[in-house]
Image (cartoon, rainbow, N blue to C red):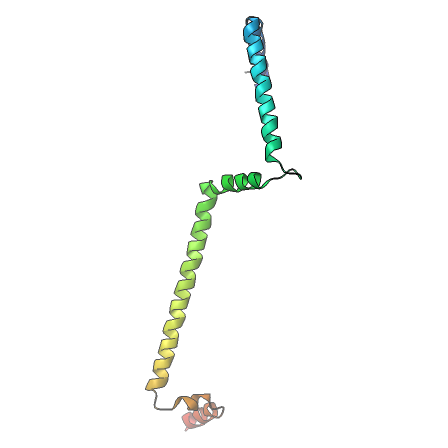
Length: 130
């Protein structure tokens, strides 16, 4: 069984043999196309870089690439949604407790000031022992 290096070597050898059989006009055209592609790649790299090697466009492109990955967006959206639902439910539960407390104070026989009196707890404890 061949290793990857041996397979790659065999492929490059076959390509080298095929290149030797090409006509000179085709070789010149391929060489010019390769040079144009390399120059365009270098030009794109220099055009996108600012004075310090970074640019706003490059940062925006990187952020855009990051945001297009659904593997990152969906869990983040689910966590945010769960946090929002927990917040709303907590607020709803606290509101119903406040309403029950208000109803208790209004329905009780004692005035609300009695519950604020510091001696009220002592009086309740003393009167319940009797």
